[in-house]
Image (cartoon, rainbow, N blue to C red):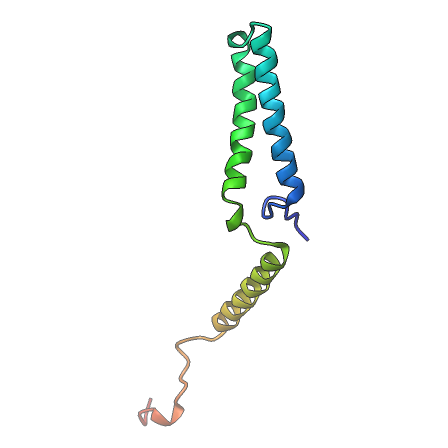
Length: 105
């Protein structure tokens, strides 16, 4: 079965986000105290980018599927695919009403 880590935003992931935010804040304060805040812009850009990405996932977390919903969606998708495959096996040109044939055809 596939990994649902990108589809679910659970308490563990929320704790990791909090840790990222705290680490970012601590790093900014440490660089500021050392007078090196602007010297470390590339490092800060990377930290900000990673944190921003995770904040985005947290912000839209309500749109994520739970594992149960994801499994239900997979089952429905599979059933729809099987129905399409079954329908594709029937030729639309077949004469479903042989009694309507014109004599002599």
